[in-house]
Structures are given as structure tokens and as C-alpha cells.
Image 1: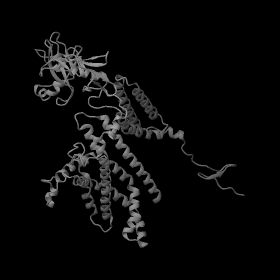
Image 2 (image 1 turned 60 degrees about the vertical axis):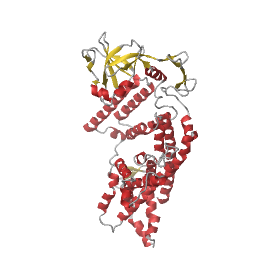
Image 3 (image 1 turned 60 degrees about the horizontal axis):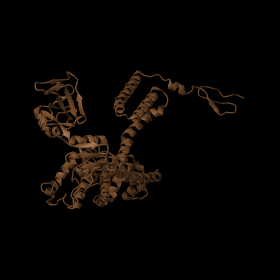
Image 4 (image 1 turned 30 degrees about the vertical axis):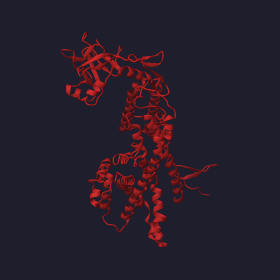
Length: 546
């Protein structure tokens, strides 16, 4: 009996086994791991790992200075893991996953966690630092000039831009001639020879500082007056633009009673750890407080404060109406235009498409300002063009219709582009088959085209809803939330939750970051729930039409 010839690539039957492939063996994992390294690849790896090492060293110093040992340990562990991963030839999938994971953690997870942690604190103006910082601020702000106070020659300087940089006092001791730099953290002596001192003791130049001239210092006279430099015996404050005096703090902290006492009036303010402030017997709080954990008070304030909870529900309903109306309106208009230009009987489609995406190509903030002027009651283009006298932003429903119309104009080009791409991916055989079966164009669109479009575009519609739900610019640059009722100037008819939050937290005299973070978590929860439900329904729809 003849046996089949064996050759390269032929299969032979081994006793008790399946066919054995003979011929050229496959490349083994060991061989792949020992593939030659190119010069360009090696150079890129050296540069990237060098940047990682440099960034890690740069970040380590402030962590050590602040004694953030947990953060330092995470930094060292992350850096060591990156070097282990990219210096070896194993774990190839991880080489691609790790960068994306790190960016996800840095730009998504960490901000969300930080916002959530801030929501449980009183963090804001007057409550930014520690209790020790608050005590220093209270004592420094109460400094008064007393008879016989020592005065020193002073020059105003900065370490940044002369118009906006942090101010520093360059102070000369008239007895020793030593120069010190003073800011809100205290005095720091400068090295001998680091400053140039003119006759009279005024510093004209200093290493690392930009000395402001008279005009620049005058333009920032309020900042100069507000700057207080704490010292061992009190604090230094400016007396004009060329001299400072060392005054005495009227209010002093007493560790025995954990309180602040005013030496002039005898009034005391006792530390209250629950609110993070010094409070007097009659309930008066000192403006300088410290950051503390306040539990759920920010959340309960949203639900129980009648001034906030009352308008909150109405704003939420309008927020949903704006987000749904904007998303559905832009989708329908963009889809109809895409369907019209998708017809094979249309001519000049490229020109039409170029013209139709112009709103998408222009800066949205500039277009919002233009539309705001177009809706102006007195000189707006819309009223003048149609001979109307409508006060668009003066009535609730006209203002709401106006902002939805503006968002429709800004958003339809995006939906037009994605709908055009989705239509081109639908085989024409499907619609032609429905025509052969006797279906009308409307029946063909409803049974075939629209379901397939929704399957393709549902994730984009969900993201569009989330974007419009928090579309701060669309409201703030057109109506600023107006019109406002006479009894509530903090909540307007066109306010979204995001603009309402901004006005509540930052529209008053002091910023309330903790309160703003709490409302942000409400908004995040609403959008997350809506998105999760929508994605679930989208998956069900994909299973039906897959």
C-alpha cells in the first residue's frame, strides 16, 4: 500500500494523536521576546522614560515638603511599575492599557473623588486653610498702628506679572541695612548682595523679584493696603507706597480657652469645630475660619432650605425640557437635512454640506453673543426683520423658546454630519427590498432607515443629552438665566441646574465650593442614571436589529 508523500506543510497522522503539521515552525514567544530593537524605538523609550523620571522627581519635592507620605508612596510605586513594565519585553497588553488607565484616573476618577470629598466640607472663602492659618489671618488683619511704631523703608515687588502677580514687600532695616522679603507667610531675609539699596534704604532691585515703579504700585494700591506681613511682635502693614509700620494685633488667640479676644473691647470668640469658625456668645462669627467636615449639611441644605429647594424642582423640570428639546430638535433637523442630501437625485450636495456645517465651524461663544444681540427687543435683527416688538428675554416662555432655537442652530450641523455618515453605511439593498415589497417611502423609512439610524446614533444622542443638560454657555452667554421673578433674583426662568448652582455658590459675596460640589453630585447622579437607562435600552435595541 502506498503512503502519501510528505512535504512542507503536509499533515501526518501520529499514533494516538491528531494530525501533526510539518514544515516551517511558527515563531515562538521566546523568539518574539528577543526580536531586535530598533534605534528609533530605543531612543523613544529612553526619552519617554526620562520624562517619566523627571516628572516624578519634580512632583516628589512638594510632596516631601508637605509631608504627604501616602502620595509620595503612590508616586514611587507608580514610577517603579512604569519602569518595570516598559523596560521589559513581557506584558505587552499592559503596555497599551496602562497609559489610558493612568489618564482615566488622573482626569476622571480623581476629579470626581475630589469633588465628592469637597461636598462634605465647608470649603470656600473664609474656610480654605487650617485653624492655625485662620488664627494668623485674624491676628494679622487686626493690626493697628500704635504710637511709637517702628517704620521701615519699603519697595513693592512681585515674583510674577507686575499687574497680577503676588505682591511682596522688600523691607530694609535702617539700623543694619539688611533686606527682607515679606508676604502673607512672614518675613524672609535675603542673602547679602542679593538686593540693591538706594540711599534712604529703598530697594531698587533684588534677585528673583520685579520691583514695581510708582505707577505700577499705584495701580495696585488696594492690594498693597490689604497685604499684611505677620511678625513675632505683630505684623507689618503699608503706610503709603514707600514705607511700612510694625503694628500691634488687637485680637489675640488664647490657647487656654481656645478663643480669640479683642484687647480693646474685651469681646471673645470661641472656636466652634463643627462650623470651622470662631463664634461669640451672641452668634457673631469672625470672617476668617478653617476647613472642617460638615457631613451631609450641604446636601440637606439643598433639600430643606425653602429658598433653594423651592426653585430647585422647577429648574430641574426645565433642565430636562431644555436637554431633551435641544437633543431631539437637533437630531430631527440634522437627520432631515441628511436624508434630503442623501437622495441620488440631489445635485451639488458637497456645496450644500459645506454651507450647512458653518455654524459648527464657528466659535460657539461668539455665536451665542451674536444671537443674544439678534434677540434684542429694541435693535435686534429678528424683531426688525419681521416687524415684531417681542421682548424675547423679558418673558419666561419666549426666553426659553429663544435659547432652544439658538441651541438648535448651533447643534444641528453635528447631527447632520453623523447622520450623513450613518446613512451612507446603510445598504441601499434594504430600502430597495422594501420598495419591491410595496412599502411606501415613509414605511421604508420607519421600518428600516430610522431603526438602523437609532442603533448607530443612540450613544451620540445620549452624550448630546448629557452635554446639553450641563450646557452652561448656552444659558449664561445669552440670557444669564433671565428673566428673574421679583421675589427671587437668584433663580431665573431659563436657568439650568448648572447656572443655578453657579449663582448660588459664587454669585454672593463669598464662594462656597463645598455647597457647589454637593449640587454637582446631584447633577452627576441624575445624568448618570439617565445615561445608564438609555444605554441599557440601546443594547436591547441593538440585539433586536443585529
